[in-house]
Image (cartoon, rainbow, N blue to C red; front, side):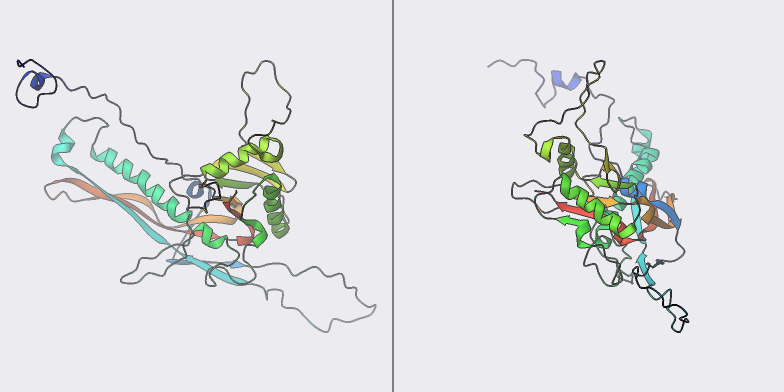
Length: 333
């Protein structure tokens, strides 16, 4: 077969002069939202171990007082107080760009400032992963890092004793970990939280993808995908029918439903149908916060000849001030 000019020859030839076609577009295919980190109040930590106090009211009493009876016994009003704590955790991401890369034109671009910005985005996802976890806290040592306990460790009916004192555990009725999750069960969770706080609070459900889609089906009768849609008033000037649920109004509070970062949520129990991604945290934003010992910042290191380098880091921990004010979902069907 005679030789001919072509585009696939690797040896010197016509292909050597073909121009590169590289579009000036850079795509990062990874979820970046951090709703747990962003939704918590910010507080200043002054120690690696930060603490807070739990207290509760005594049970109401229907007993009456005999006329003329003096007060002969006294009750310690603060007998139920308990102290609990969490550790901060250090998070870090390093970056470096060679001197040659800094001087080269590239798609993106791939300079030091962009490397720093990308490291910050990655650091926030590291923090969100830990905050969303079921992991317990860990004290630091010469060989072990300080670790902050995740939200799932606090929202537990059998938490670690050194994390949640006895009597302040999340009730089992505020945790759903079985099959058959539907709208009635969702209302049961909200009612359980209300029975603990007594407040019609605005709750937030941070839901993984499987749970988010399941709750959107609450717009259907019985919450089953194949069921008919509930009848609604239709505006003739509108051309869109919305089936997602973003704000759920119950008898005991309004729930804002937002998407969790699927890369950061803990693995949930797979159902009989094999579906996953069912985890969700039903939180009251007033009762958790982020305690910062060292705020997020960037540090540049000396250039030793190879190029500019540095790191971004922060030190923070999770505070859950009232474990009974939250709920959790780990399985739905």
